[in-house]
View (tube, rainbow, N blue to C red):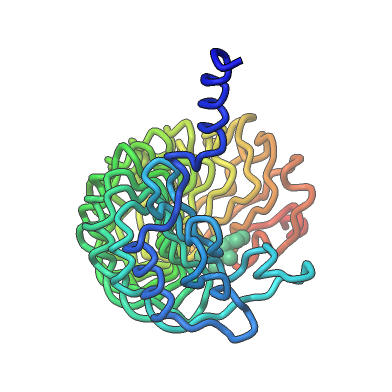
Length: 375
Ligand SMILES: *[C@@H]1O[C@H](CO)[C@@H](O)[C@H](O)[C@H]1NC(C)=O
């Protein structure tokens, strides 16, 4: 028996011994987390932090925390004020959590973090610690939307060479979009900085972000032109620059994109004409140029492949007629050409059948279709 038992015993010992890779909280990480917790205060009834106790393992027992199985270090910290888990939605009723306080610099001691999410807590204030950009080299996901953060976006954000998601939307951030961000060309896929107080230009080299598929920069105070480099972004599907102070014209080459699905440029100070290439682009389903100073005629460039769920060109300075080719489009859901200087007969055709007069209101001399007979 003895001859065979040794390997068996070894095997059993290996199976029951704690794995060398099992994560258990490092003291430094636990201290950093407790400092982060001390800088935040949650609504008493929430209990987000009630599992964060010194006697339990932060890697396995703390709400919103997880460790890397190899290094044993904290790799994941994610607290969402509008989650649907057992803590945030007890008994299945989602609560909208509120937390106040600030983001402690201690977050930078979690130097193996790959995900940092503190989202939708509404009252977390103060700046984003600038050390986040320099001390967290493994960071892939940085999401701090829906708080009341102030100050600038850390200037060296571009040193986070693994960053794929940057979402700082719905805060009170000011200052520029750091030009360093364009160094993230091989990583950044999703950028949401909407609804802040950002000023200055969209970085001219923005087009270097070759992996970026969503760029949401609406509702800021950005000025200057739309950088022509955006037209050469191979993966850009959604570009939202609405409600800024952008000037200049729409880069015509944007219309040649094979991936662009939505383009929101409404409520800026954009001039020049509507690029014909945008109207004939079969992949572009949403085009909103409303509330700008776009002039000239609407290009007669729709094709049977044009398919718009939303086409809003209202409140510009468009002249000429409603192009005949619009009647050949495969589909036009919501069309708004109101508040321009259009004139002439509205063409007949399927895309126009479901539209009402509001789509054409306040122009110079349009008639026909829902506006009634031309006299
Ligand atoms: C187009 O964009 C403007 C500015 O953001 C907005 O006010 C308008 O509602 C949008 N149009 C549609 C149909 O959503």
